[in-house]
Length: 179
Length: 439
Image (cartoon, rainbow over all chains, first blue to last red; front, side, top):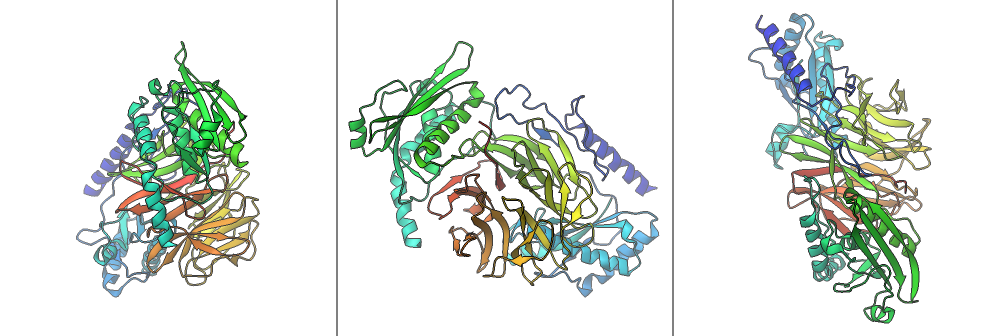
């Protein structure tokens, strides 16, 4: 019951996000298979007659997560240059596997992250390896691949800021988020 | 090498004061819509063979919203091919007959003169003339009638004319760059003039934006947006703001690169497990897998003849740059020194490969002569990222960090002339240099 209320709330948040981005009536919404509505806009510089005119597009707020298993962490940390799930995270993985299997059609996004060193695209690929390692671990516990999507944020969303090894270790992670 | 560099910096330090004051004055006088990311040109090195040129203040510059002469001068200096001769106080315009002996005495080889006049309808009439003062020859001129919003573009066109007349090659000053800023928790994609000025926001988002890439014709930008909380590839029409989804498959979608004909994009997708390369129609549709590998394949980029795709792969155990025929086939390794070589960019003339190499924990911009395989590191910074060639293959723009802040730099391919395009608002990254514009 509570979960349904949370879901309804986040749907409202999604719709509100869609409305807040200043869409003009003659604009065509961009098709987006993930459920959130992205929009085009052409208001910002419509009076600009210069040859280098740029029409600005302003996107609204980010969507929010649905709830996961109560009292269970949703972050798996990795060693440097590693994509192996360490033994201490096995119970976390198992708790999420139970939660997904118990909930009918729950959808889990596994988001891989890296520390700040190196290129953005290469780090995106490294984060993808971490996310896929978690997805495989869940699959071994009987979670359907259809319910889990492995994606990467690379180094774009660090959990902590700074250049120390302690900070890097906090950023090398996979986050489990329910949608 | 390092010592040479420092002495160049000292030489340069005395010179650009006058020029910088002009640039700042131009900024102060700008009355167009507020611009979030202002830039300042700081030339940090001096090359050996530079053409000495005097740009006289344009008649009417003092009352004009843009200081045409100062913009032209900054453009030419940033190219690395020109050295400015002081022309302050000269009272000349495009119809003046200059005293060539006097300019020769100031050791100028050439002189540009001009004027800017506000017309009754509010537009501006800009005229200029270029002189060879060694031969006492009129090298031609141009005139433009434009709105205030196009005055900087006109100044860049004048710089292009001068550059082409005097070097025999096409200038890139009227081209555009795109880049991304992060200000607080807000990400913006910008379109700016090649000098970083006149920045206009194309997209603003609460989620990251990376890897913008101009279409070959210059009207569209492909990029990766995380707005739906996963990486998805869009193509964005700059003039209208209309966007279309190109790749939104299960998993991550990233690293868009245009084929030279603009009809196809190469992208990195993880929909079949692992990061792998695909080509996809520029209007969307079903992707075609380029290769199968067991590890990471990413950062594709087309050669200018469209026949080869360069990319990064860790198939040998560490990230290296490879190339493969665009129709698929066997990949050939291109980089051999070091164990972390990423972010390839191929010069439009096909002669150079720019990339980032990790050297002792530092990430440094390198340039390879593709004919000989010779490689040079051309920066003294340690967090370089994402090089992109100017359309005339003479300059690179790249991202780096200076004093702990993100910055964009341009550099000549030998690393001798660098200019910082320093954003004031937030971090600045992911530059991509657009193609030549239609005249």
